[in-house]
Image 1: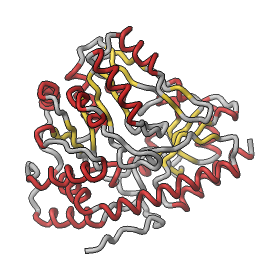
Image 2: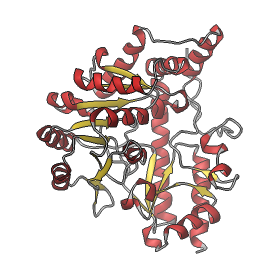
Image 3: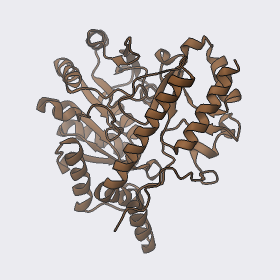
Image 4: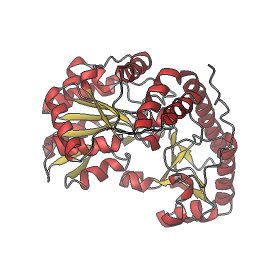
Length: 394
């Protein structure tokens, strides 16, 4: 069998499919005809092997409670081993409907109400939401902006925040969303050593681990064998293969005590078996989707390079944070000197674009916008030209 879905230039109509990205603009206060480049899903059809597997499963016609066979774990293991050099054990695996669900379960499992949880802003906004919604306190060791526009960890501040706030749980975003950093082994080692020193559990959201364009991803638990004992590693095929709506994530927790506490919270939420078609899709993606994945990565890399060139030649006042991972680019609009309201008016009403305002990722994201470039190049070019026209007319 051959992969049939390798035309990433093809524009696929998503309106009328219940798409959060395309069908919910009006209900969220945006014009219906807006061009959406915000939420983190792709505008690409997934691997044909995934579609074939789902279709074949659907023909059976019975969708009762489902548990995957041994071959499911074998496919997940093979992917993690071949792509990231990590060999997790099957006994470590807890399946959840999503990584954000897992983050919330971890907050409840490893902290009590009123306790503090550490994050690194600007960061994926559900990190803050699952902490605050569970009546915990958000503490941030903000990332440091570098002269080249990139970001780094202030390890002195990181350790100080842990000591000052008696931190026992840290939510790590690796690769980092939205700034696109792919943390080096040395950086992860420093994080792990500090967390070991103070007895901090590390929940590592590695959902973007396959989307690395510069550098290489290291699974946090594999950086040092001692780190496995304090790790909750969150993985999913959803970003890699555009399967978010099928709701399946694979959470690996080597420490039995941490795993038991996590499972109790999953059970307390009333959740048990996963989406039957999600399990089918996950196994097919990891087992047969390699060619699709490689071509997708090459295409998205081209879109990143196209965006960098376009901004440099047409909108030099908009600074692109050096992209290393994810298909989400972090754009600095601060040189325009606009307020948040003025910038949103520019982007939404004048350019007709729906991006993610940087402020939702924390105060340190003020003046920035996150843009999703996992779309056909003609869609991206159209959007960037609309932005160019709007800025030139300021």
